Length: 239
Length: 239
Image 1 (cartoon, rainbow over the protein chains, first blue to last red):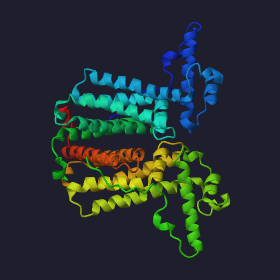
Image 2: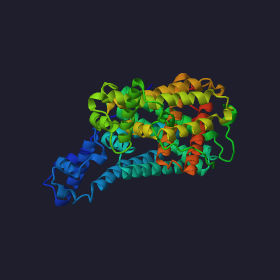
Image 3: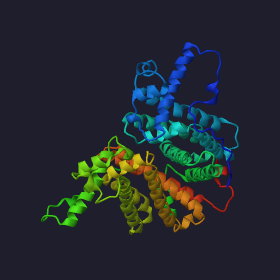
Image 4: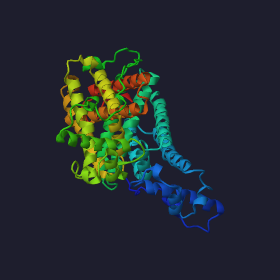
């Protein structure tokens, strides 16, 4: 069992680099900071008991230190703010995972490298992930739909990558989507386990990484035996 | 693609058989009905926007047609009512799935039979499943813990069953738990898709059943290639 040196960022929404203190902020910088403050205010409230539907524009504005009217200079509505949170949760993640897959990593280490990178990403964005986990089946159908779409997009990108793996050549397009779906489900479960763990519990995080890696290997091994052209899969003979 | 004749029960919490009108109810029957009414009242409120943490004893009692003080004759607290809802969601499901696995079904049909049975169960208990989906990552840590435990119990029972499958003999105990975990994850995803579908959309439900069956086959095929005694799995050679 490996202990992984995951660094604890404490789930801060604002990256350290943006907390420098330079010369007095320009108007654009002030606007950008207020926009960020509004997003962080919403994330902060959502990390507890509140759901997005119950969040009021007034309390978010207040937490961000602006009057409600100022909110509208940044977002046309609370719903838009929520959608922005969803998008920013997924956009950087997709880029990150794409970078991992494109890197010069020996294939045998690719799964583990992806798992570790993903777990670190969750640790660095805990507030975002708690928000996503809650809203995935929460009261706002717009949020549920957008989150589902983002996950579907992530899955499709992965399916495209899997299509290039020689040993998965017998897996047709539709089945590649299902295989990718299994992978995405598994890393979503891993994210949930990471959120439940203590961020400084290296042993627990290492265990989650080990088990997630094994589950992904099981899924991909299954893919290598899959024959989309067969009416009945080999599993019937082996059960 | 198969169209499945899933019967739509409309997600009613109270089975039709308990709505008979016999002679005036006994005291025990009245008590039992009130208890049921309180559970259904909570389920009804939770199917919308409310989370369990925001539910008040007062409003649940009112919906059930009793005074708040009467609530305590049935449940010591709202938390106990919530835990009862979780338990009743899972208890009958475990029994049902056990029955499917024990039945005289040709192995080649076992996966599909289990999937169909499970989907029908979700359709018959939609309110319970919406409640579980929402509370799984909701604000009450007690609920989250209990739900997680129930899922773990379900997974362990399945792992025990998988241990009897000859072609999975090379999968060690710990890895059987991971394999079972993948299966449970997949059927949980299926439940979520079922909840999002229209209950009378036979084509969509059939599609969900088809895809879930295929994903379970992929997982089990992976299991048949798994060698727990190897330090490095065969997947490294095939990727």
